[in-house]
Length: 137
Image (tube, rainbow, N blue to C red; front, side):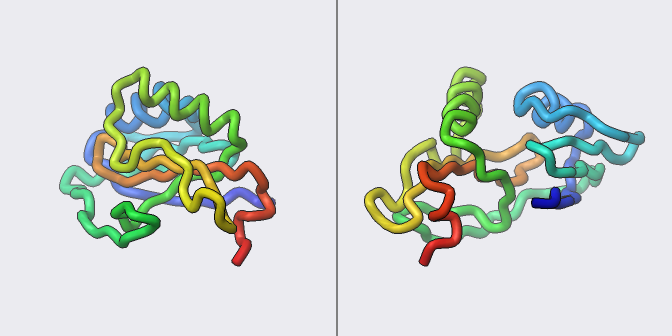
């Protein structure tokens, strides 16, 4: 699979560097005084400075939760997902949707969690016990 590229706005590059680099453990790539490249599990994400950036407050109901839209993240292995959930919990990061199993006992059962970066961008990280369920209908 080829890596994806995502550029998104942040209102503070230092806060983005601390969140994505230090907390999430994303190695930093190139940067300038207006943007920073991060390696998010092999994918290139770029935090672009926009001092006026504001989070969107839109959601859709999914399995009894209000899922923020837009959001981005990565499908991890179950052990990597649990490690990240534990690290975020220990760091006191507030979850918009706490780590849990969604669609339990159904096609597409998955571990999921939602939280926001310091600029309010919503992130979802998920994992499947069986990766073949990723696109199952």
